[in-house]
Length: 295
Image 1 (tube, rainbow, N blue to C red):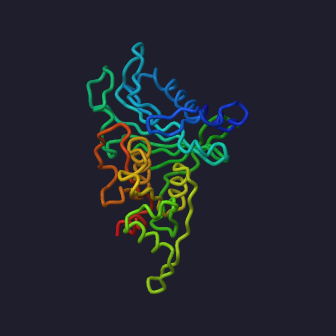
Image 2: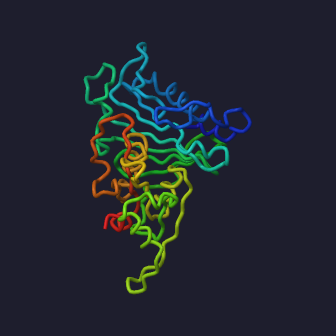
Image 3: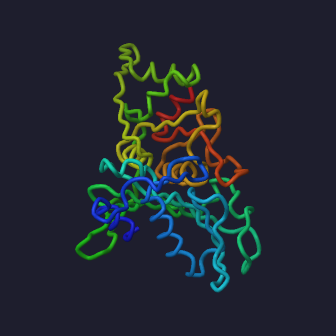
């Protein structure tokens, strides 16, 4: 994360801005920084002996541990650089990761069985956000903690102890440009957000949307409210990746006292994956806000 942060912060100076002119397994244009961050994480994690395999949003198949290194008891899933298309305009981006305990025999290469586990089986998850400061937000299933990189000593220092998401906040975060593609229920919710309803003592909610998921969820975690990425007529199964984005973010939000669903009444962390690059809708945030969306 320190290496990625260093190069993100000077991206305009070292010719890693812009596109590689290639597309990834998702059919999305690969940015030079995506490719760079992907390689940095793999090279940092392939030889330590903790992992038996990795999976990245940028690669079609499992990334094996080289044969000369020991195989550990965990698998790592990661989105190396979420929101990377925003780097050219200096908007906060991030790295998201998820860690699962393997289910296959130790000492062997990891298989898809190790990766296709529901999100509630994660033993750790976190994200780094590269903004005015670099911050690491992390959970190992016992609360959520935030660490800020102090460049003067080169270390992440605990800056946000035991983060708790507010119970409710009058803020929603969504790409409203997709409004006409959503279900009637989702459109009704957004219409309701915008209304003053005196008899319910409700004021119109504020819209906050950055367009970099890690930044939007980070703000939701600290300030409260709800982040939505619903299914639509074009993307019936949603757009976010279950294993690399939705599961780790949902685990963090739940550990901070929030809720996460697929927007269709199902707890996000109970979805059993059937593909490395499976997509899902996502509604995540303060518990009472998520209840409002479900209602």
